[in-house]
Amino acid sequence: MSGRTICHQCDRPTSVCLCDALVHTLAPLELVIWQDPDEARHRLSTAPLLHKSITNSRLVVADQYDPVKLLGPGWRQNTVLLFPLEHKPECPVEQARQCQQLLILDGTWRKVRRLLLLNPWLKELPHLQLTPAELSRYRPIRKSPRPDGLSTLEAAVAGLNRLVASSEFDAVAGVLDRLVELQLQSQSQSQARQVK
Image (cartoon, rainbow, N blue to C red; front, side):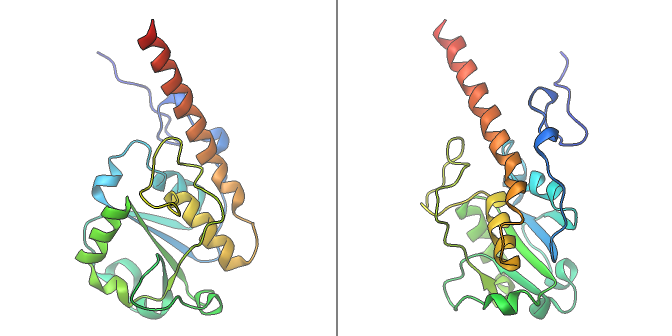
């Protein structure tokens, strides 16, 4: 039995290749995408697409990390976390713009809370939080328990746009729209076959 052919650029099956929708761009600071190991196995995860879109990004997969190994010796001053920490106020955007790294945690809300529990040092970081004006474009194929829940790719785009005070990174989200479109087509075809 032969497996599906995989595109070596977007790492998706060639039948649902996303290369034509990928936009490659440089962020104003290094984007560090920390993915929960269980999330890394999810076929519709947006973190790999985000990593391919932002040329100065790193994608790491782990349950736990030493902050110095992940972010460098000045991690407390040089990194801002994109997550709504509840124990302290949000970092002013002007301060966040001075940071050299934006850290994004990738996984469901439950998985990300687990990363926070396993890595309490994350709560020491200054943080930015998002208040999205619209529902996630990812909702048709993957639901969030929170009405303000966004995919990792959408959150990164919104966070980066906030840091540069523009909509400069909106084009990156085009690959998510294409992913959703292809997934909905696949679901529709599958349902049509079941009806026959």
